[in-house]
Length: 296
Image 1: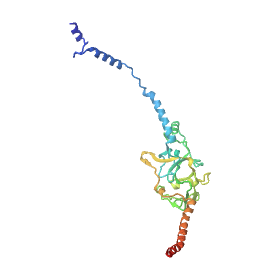
Image 2: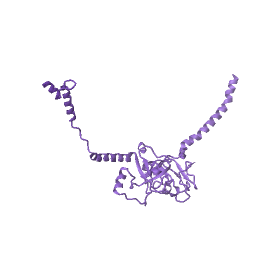
Image 3: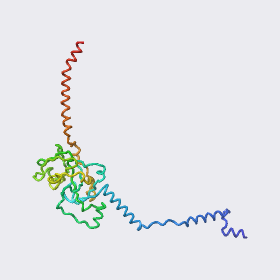
Image 4: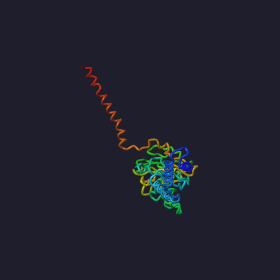
């Protein structure tokens, strides 16, 4: 009975196989199951690390890529409304790109344009969020306008318009309804200026409600904005959601507005004269050539 008792105690499998190997396998599995697992870090312990990474990324994005700005006035209506939030591309200038005609740009106050304007005092939370770029900074002295002329351009306004760049009229559907492209007044509404290299001439879309380059021609920059003061190009109206839209360059700036260089103008004028003179010489020589051929 002893062997049968040992079988009934489970020392052998019911199918008659040797139980030793099975017992060892069971023991090995047990040892594996008892191997201590690495304890996961608590979510609350990881949270400060995640927040820190998010803040660093936000600061890098604000510094090198995109920053949000708040529109404080009506000078760019109806393109931009007071209270809009725009996203500004700060990456492109890092690669040496300069502002182009028609772009809406944000720039640092070039020469006290905002002097006397009230500045909102942010609370500590707004100050921190503005510093890292999660909300517009209330402390930065920045303006937003449309680029009309770049280095080398001649920009002029006569009467009520149209506004001209290098003698070519602009079609400006973005100008605030009821406004004329040029303002008839003696404080800057009538002008003809040449933009120096390295600077831009800017104007607001609400022409009768924008203290732009026209009204600062007596400052140290003659109303121009140095290119190195430009923060970047506004590319999107991001807030409120009902106002979401992109800010493309208007079609009127697609026409060839470049100023012709004096040398190029001289060359263009000389080419017809040279061709005319050459034609005259050939005509004068033709009878002699023809006669010689006939004599032979």
